[in-house]
Image (cartoon, rainbow, N blue to C red; front, side, top):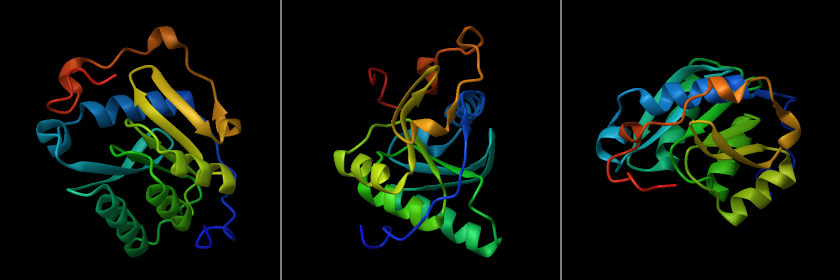
Length: 168
């Protein structure tokens, strides 16, 4: 916690239209993650647009690759979003906050410590983002509900990672 306790995240918003667009794009674009299921993907986004996509066997390595890419290209983190395929753990929360990014999204679930840390530092934490569903356990005040759910489709089973046909 000491590594992030003095960090103030910038003001930000997450429009549900961006969230649904990112979920659709990321979860339907061919990738090793969707093919094999043994790879984690991390995507740096601005609003509803993916900017940089990295994959690795470890979710921590994938987010570290994003951090390196941002450093190399002098990317301002203030208006960015991280979307990951991995669980929202304390380590993922700490890495995202240290990068200065105010919003972390995953198609997977949460850990209790990841949620607790996110709440302490004001990180918006969105999990289980698939189709028209998502769960926000921290930073709800940043969510702007601007999308009509009738226009959002459910995620097709063929776009889930291999071996996850029954994940819910």
